[in-house]
Amino acid sequence: MKLILSFFMSRKEQIYLPVLLAFLILTVSQAALAFNLCLYARSNSYPSSGHVFLTVEYDQGRVFESYGYWPKEKSPSYTMVNYTFDNPVRVIQKLNGGELSTRLKQMTEVRLCQPVNGISIAQIRATALKYPQTHGPYSVLINNCAHFAVLLYNSITGDEFPLRPTPLDTRMLIKKITDSGSSSYTQYRNLVQDYVNP
Image (cartoon, rainbow, N blue to C red; front, top):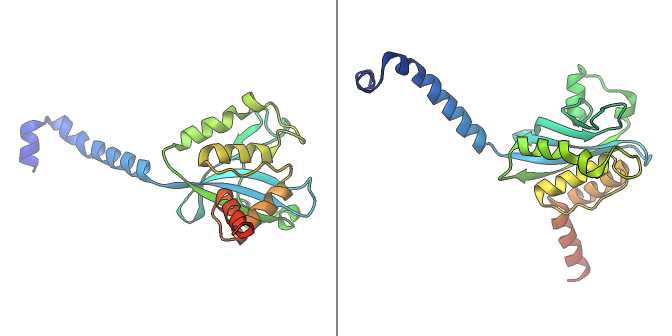
């Protein structure tokens, strides 16, 4: 094999060939790696409490990237990428050395995940970062974390999850969907319609 390579390639080219092959293999494997976009909601029983956010996750729930929408005091650009609290509680606990705040301990968290095909993580991130330009600054009543996360989730996955005004409302609907055995709001809605109109 070395003899064949030496015939076609210079010594310098032969040195760089393994590096090039490794890069090509890594690029192809990453392109083929499937991931899910997950809509998370956590809250306690108070409507004004809690948070709704999105994560990009690989197999077994490994979080690759996260997106959330916050008031200007937290983020001048409103959209946050990979902010600690835009993560599942299990990840926050790990990042904090096993500790959780009393507030987080009192919250219930649920998620709804959809496989994503034909779109890259860079495209999802770009869509998230454009949200303030099209929907304006963070507002408790209008453009809050739930509005941001649900709109982005729907636009990427094609699901039709309805907008809910608070994290609590969003959490309760996700729980209904997952308790029914459905994997999306669209599937849940069709299931309910079939039940009501057999």
